[in-house]
Image (cartoon, rainbow, N blue to C red; front, side):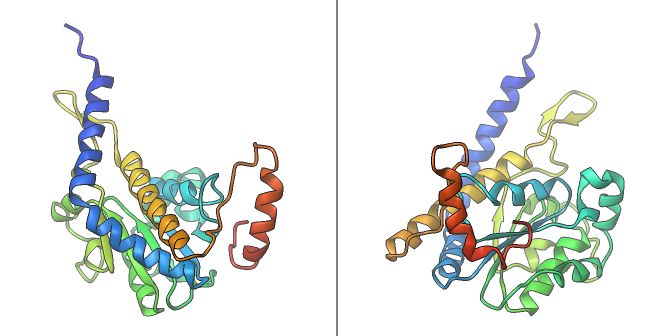
Length: 245
C-alpha cells in the first residue's frame, strides 16, 4: 500500500493550526493590542527574522491587504539568498545585530515582532534585548517546545521566549520536521504556522484600529484598477520611515 505523504502533511498542518487557535488566542490578542496602539499613535510596526524566518517579514511588508506602516529589518548577511551557510553562521554571532539595528530608526513605544522557531541563536535574542533597551515592545513568534529541548547559544543562557513582552508559540516541534520516514524526519511547517499567526494578529490590529475611528493605512493590490494610485498616496507618509520602500 502506498502511503500518500501529502495527505499526512496536510493533516499535520491542520492539527498545528488547530493547536494555535486553541492555545494562543490570548497571546494573539495581547500582541494585537500592542500593535493597534502603535498604529493609532502613528508609530511603526517593525519585523525581524533570520534565514527562513525572514520570509515572515516579507509576508507582511508592502502587502496587498496589509498595513502600510510596516518596517522590515533586512540584512543581507542574514539572508539565505546571499549565502545560506554564511547566514547560519552569522545568526550565531553575539553582538552582530546591534550594527544592523543601528541602521534603522527604532523609537520608544513602537513595536517589533521577532521570528525565530528555535529561539536559541544570539542574533534574534540580541535583537529582542536591544529593542527592549530602546523602549520598544517586543513580540516573539517562536516554538516553546524547541526552546525547551535545546540549549541557548546566547551567553545569557536565555531563549527568545524568555526575553519578549509577548510570546506566541507557533506550536512547531523540535527540529521543525513534521513527517516520519522511518529512519529520518522531513518537511517543515514553521513558515505556514508563522504566516497563520502573524496574519491573524494583523487582522485583529486592523479591526481594533478601525473601531477606534481611525482609518487603518491599508495597501491594496497593484494589479487591480486604481491600486497603484491608492498605494502611492498612502505610502507618501512612510517614505522616510520605511527603509526598504
